[in-house]
Image 1 (cartoon, rainbow, N blue to C red):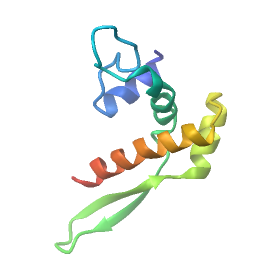
Image 2: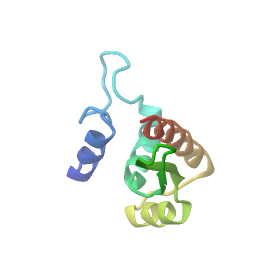
Image 3: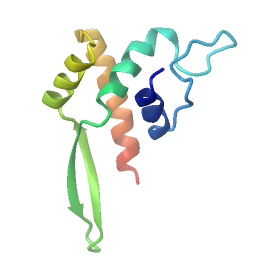
Image 4: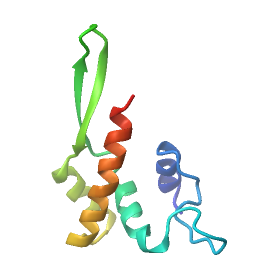
Length: 104
């Protein structure tokens, strides 16, 4: 795992070895989901974010989702070949991450 991947894991609250296959049960990421997690970690900084003001006047951020054009460029530069199936899995991760980020 690269330093950048380890930093992304830390940012998302994943254990540093989350992308490693473990034989002792289902801890970490299941092997069939590793490509989607790796792709998401490669584009995890490509969010479309709105700065909002709450009714009480407090500033905040609203995560709308990953910016598809920036995500596509990042994936291409990372050498990750995107397929429709892989993109659907990445979008599922994005939805969960967006919900978690906007819950605060």
